[in-house]
Length: 380
Image 1 (cartoon, rainbow, N blue to C red):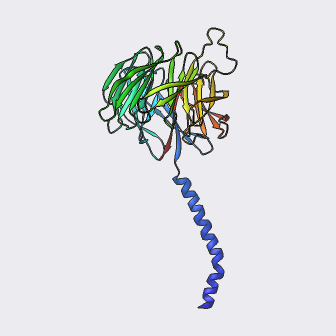
Image 2 (cartoon, rainbow, N blue to C red; image 1 turned 45 degrees about the horizontal axis):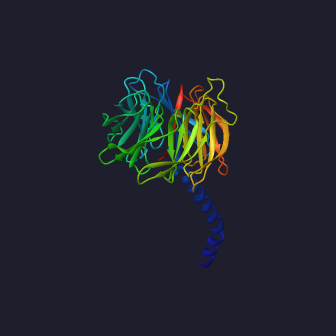
Image 3 (spheres, rainbow, N blue to C red; image 1 turned 45 degrees about the vertical axis):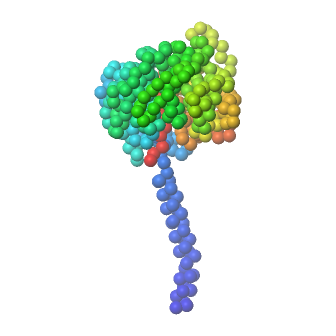
């Protein structure tokens, strides 16, 4: 018995090592297999489809699918996208008649899209967003000067508009507050941001008091983003390239401007007359440390450091990007930024330096025609 024990013991180290190595490799492969996969969805206006990419941990993109819109014949001017909070449904806004929201089911394993159905929109909507309960679709019409609220069915398809609200000129973005108690709409042509109290239980919007926040004349407020801590909001102005920082009061929904800077690259003169500012999109990293804005006239991305205590911005600099960068977004890790060019029909992915916020190591990928919107999604 003793000899047998010794024999087993003498072989035990090698057996244990082999077992440990096998278990470690299995664990590692299991962790990687079970880790969330990251996908990027690009809305293409002229080809009426969505380019689906899978992104590796190193930021490389692999084409997965081109999902065409069903029941849509003519191209629109842009293709806004929104994903439900449960990551089950992606909705695309169609800006050609009949105006509609096209809903796709998202496969949790492959990231691929399957058409579910189409729902009516109140007009040609430049922007769509889903409230944090996942039950309502916000939309804003630039040409129709209105915002609307549609209920979403259990399958993620939009029902008939529940509310359609006239606004000032050129409503552009319409988003809920982080706590879902308010909704805000930019009016690019009237230089104001409208404020509404939002009841997610009944799906109703009522004007706040005061109902609007004015910004400088002819600045053209376009897109905005909340800081992850909920204490600040950043507003990009299309017509003068301004980026304004506001302190946000969650209880009342009030905006209080604390800083104004620019998304225009150093040396921009605005001459000749056709070279006017034309800012487009704005996003912040999930950790709230860096903010980025796109500018279409100069085909650039501007970067800023964000002070978490004050909310104020410090410019990092601008980098060249895709031609006419109407849309871009940042992945959930905050390590990569993907920008698309309406006139280049491609997407460039940048690595975000985690200490400085600078954008580097760009790599481009072909998309559909006239890409203008990017959504990142982690699955499962």
